[in-house]
Length: 126
Image (cartoon, rainbow, N blue to C red; front, side):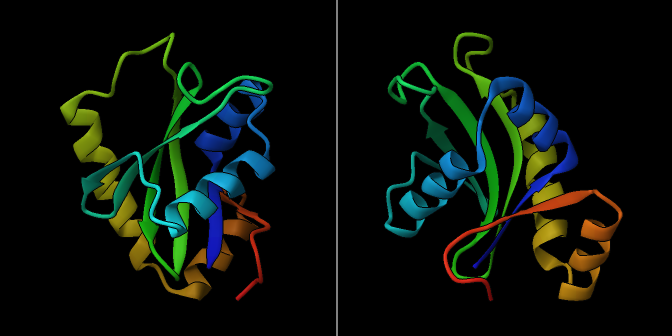
């Protein structure tokens, strides 16, 4: 499975020190069926712990996911900063995720070349 983060997500991750290792662990949890919330339409909300702490007060990430094929980190927020995501934002992220999940490998590679997506090393690369 190929795993990516959007340019916007990468900025949030850098600011909040969410490393690729933590992101890869979140995907591994999803593959094991440990999903915090399935929001439908391929959108998953997954908690990630703050460094040295637990998941409870950590970060919430929204991931467009097609298991076994592709996962794309779209958005993150700290629980202390935001209680939840609005229904409108959820709808917009589902729509955006659906578009990204449907892209061809060539289109994904072009987005990487244009710095719109960054690939996260995860397991065996397909």
